[in-house]
Amino acid sequence: MTVVLSAQQVRKTFGSELVLDDVTLEVPEHSVTVLIGASGSGKSTLLRCINLLEPIDDGRILLDDVDITAVGTDPDAVRRRIGTVFQHFNLFPHLDVLDNITLAPRVVHGVSKDEAEQRAIDLLARFDLTAKTHAFPDRLSGGQQQRVAIIRAIATEPRLLLLDEVTSALDPVLVGEVLELVAELRHDGMTMVVATHEMGFARRVADQVGFLSGGVLHEVGVPEQVIDAPRTPGLQAFLTALRHAGRL
Amino acid sequence: MSEQSRGPYAPSDARIAREAAARRAARRSSMIAAVSTLIVGVVLVVGVTHTPGWDRVQASFFSWDYARQSFPDVVQGLWLNIRVMVVCEVLILGIGLAVALSRTTRSPLLFPLRIAAAAYTDVFRGLPLLLVIFLLGLGVPALRINGLTNSVVVWGAAALVLTYSAYVAEVLRAGIESVHPTQRMAARALGLTPAQTTRHVVLPQAVRRVIPPLLNDLVSLQKDSGLISVLGAIDAIKAAAIDTAMSFNFTPYVVAGALFVLLTIPLARYTDWLSARMASRQQQGGVA
Ligand SMILES: Nc1ncnc2c1ncn2[C@@H]1O[C@H](COP(=O)(O)OP(=O)(O)OP(=O)(O)O)[C@@H](O)[C@H]1O
Ligand SMILES: [Mg+2]
Image 1 (tube, protein in one colour):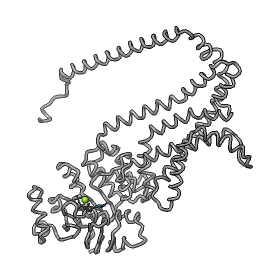
Image 2 (cartoon, each protein chain N blue to C red; image 1 turned 90 degrees about the vertical axis):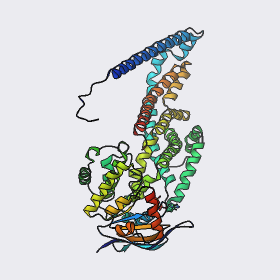
Image 3 (cartoon, each protein chain N blue to C red; image 1 turned 180 degrees about the horizontal axis):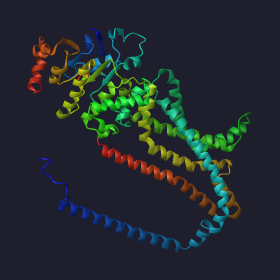
Image 4 (cartoon, helix red, strand yellow; image 1 turned 120 degrees about the vertical axis):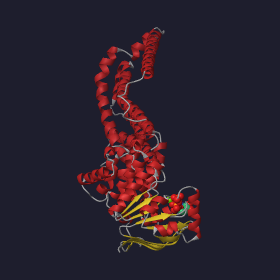
């Protein structure tokens, strides 16, 4: 089993607030790791530490066995190998869908314009977005925007894809189409770390689920175990709360 | 509602009536506008031409003969203004952009540059343009430094560039800072370097947002190019002044003024059109 990402005793503080406390997590190749946990538990922060948008205080993070948190690492080079999609779509409003997708392949990876566009067109066709090829982001529905953002992130063929609550700005109908896309990517063998509040989705696509609470990764395991047979009181309470809210 | 049961779309009576009413209202509005414009126009023309003293005003400001006489001189002078405007506009956009980028850079290496850029904009936005023109146009040639040109046109243009670059830099900086930080973050997450992010993501959005105020500054520059006449450069205003000095008739100034206005109108209208278009795009786009 090849391990793509390995976080080892990662610690992160914002001022005096301890946001990630000794987090250790291994992400095997072609697997989907889903992070769950209450708001403020540190899910986004962990993802942002992985793609080096935030420096960590202690511990280390390995990408393909190379320590990317070591002194002297070029963060741009690391980010070229990690695709990231945020909760808010963050498409570039001045570029149409095609240019949004081809910008990084052309500018960062030196792919020719023709090749980048062909790849983008193939991806758009595959995910039913051909009609939107030349649309600007403000003319897309939320679900379409988020799917374009995901396509943009995979257009550079990243080694690892980080998805941070890619559905939480969407209404329930649109959530479905975005999750469908993520399920397809899993089918393709994309290695992913996904922060989400969608338990049904976690159960369906996750190879392993990690429960974060107060910056501590309390439980990691297969979904059947973590979601259906929680061992820690914190996770039991979290799941009970979700059940009461009708979200489980 | 099932799709199959419906025939081809036919507008309802309600829609037909609504559209007819809208057409009637539109016709009525253009009628009212035409009539009121006509009335105001007639009142103005009659009022002005019947004012006592109008004959004298017409003779010394709007004399057809003097206008024809001075026209070639003024146009020749205007050609100098046009060349100064074009060269200055190019330089100003370049320098303004460089200063704006220096002011918004986060690189610690470029910290001194940031301070210098801030000092430059503070000073030159505060200095009266006329004063800068005198300092450079009269002061520098008086130093008689070898290798430096004494051309008042060059020094006058330099004063325009120095002053207007400071304005343009501030406009561009406002644009750069108005781009939401998540845009920069999204670009960095895709692996773009800071420079690539600025070039491909931040600047295009920033410039688009500030095009109306930017063009406004350029319109202003076009007319201020006439200030180099105070240094003795024979531009449109100076040419008009020379003709006026010989005839004591002010028509050449009016000719020069009219030409300046004509020169700025295309840019001003373009600015309006662009602002209107962007406003409507924004509305259609809704929340982006
Ligand atoms: N840039 C920052 N500066 C200071 N504190 C921060 C910053 N980013 C996050 N935090 C804090 O870190 C903690 C974890 O935040 P994080 O965004 O990782 O939570 P989350 O699990 O993603 O929550 P949510 O489900 O609401 O997205 C929170 O207490 C938050 O206030
Ligand atoms: Mg979050």
